[in-house]
Image 1 (cartoon, rainbow, N blue to C red):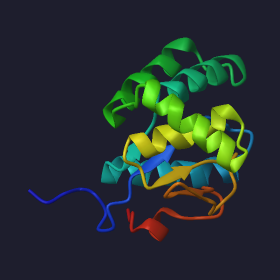
Image 2: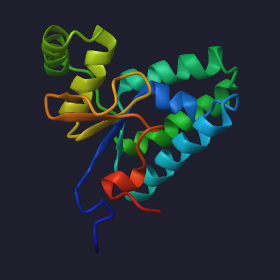
Image 3: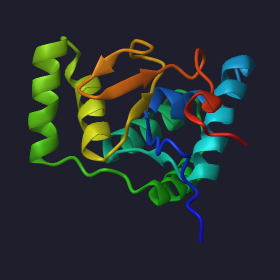
Amino acid sequence: MASALPEAGAIVFVDTSVLLAADDAHDATQQTLVRAWMQALWQHRAGRVSTQVLNAYYVGATRHFCLPQGDARAKLRRMQLWQPWQIDHQTVETAWGVEARFGLPYWDALIVASAAQSGASHVLSLDLQHQQQIDGITILNPLLATPGDLGLTP
């Protein structure tokens, strides 16, 4: 059976900001662009998240967007298919190194460290600097890049 991964083997770690933007009906343009990314990542089985991202999503979705808890929980259950990275000691050590070398806030450094530990080549984020290279991870802003840029075609 042929692999569903893109030829380049791109694995994309999705930040909390992107998951929340997919639910944000107040910015329809942003929501449409983010949902195109999410669809491509699902279709190619190329998405990853961490327990940190999922927990932050749940809090943000239920508190700030007033998404019903059941709907947020259902989304988290679906996201389990992306093999959420469990934050462990090595991930924390890696995050501290990223924090020190790149001057990122700890939570952002933990995102990058989780991406690296989970085998991702890219982080999709609305918060980090587009196209920044951090320890072999490339940051992509879903409003400035398309899934096609990574060979993730519909």
